[in-house]
Image (tube, one colour):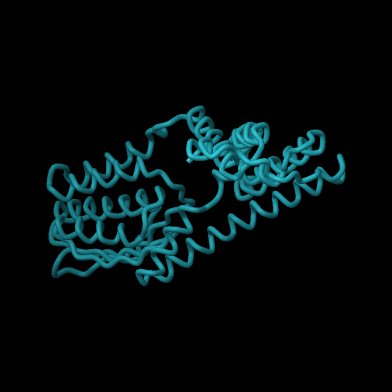
Length: 288
């Protein structure tokens, strides 16, 4: 979604159309790349390179949610565009396809209008891996993490099942506008509640490890890494936004886990936290 704040007069309608196509492509490239989780520093380099290849001059103030693009042809008045990204995720596979479109436009293999159309088609394509594969890989990750934490085999299996349940809860809650901003808290609540209930009736189980591993796929590790990298490179605004967003997500998971365990304890009694029994070293290396 973009907002034009001023227009640049051009000599001919045809020239105006070509310039608008180029600017529209840069706007769409900016929004699409940010929605897939690219770093602002990397995107700024791409935008500058593509703008130069299209014969434009531009300055870019990029943040994860909203960016300002100052763009125009050489020797003419520049236009100011505000690009609204919306809520971003991390889709590195789609990001690679977006960068390939940018390279093809920069090399002249695609026109700006064709590049915009290609980005639109990419936005409509479904994820490379469906919901089933995503849930399966999440379960394997959760179980492997539980093994690394020396959890019992039963706890590792339950952690994998809880990870699948967390994926189902987040997918379901994201469809409802009322719950969309509380998906992480709701998922952590459900996982912690069920882990505490299971530990209350199963001797030797550790509900803390099961809860942590059940929500491990929701932890904002990548966002925190990108944010710290941007701060180190002097991008204070975007880096701070990413770090604060990661901390808020972590707080939501923590509060959801606390509430879930407290509700379970009030209904079924306190769950005993068993000491991790340990897994053979060979299995830990396999989990890695």
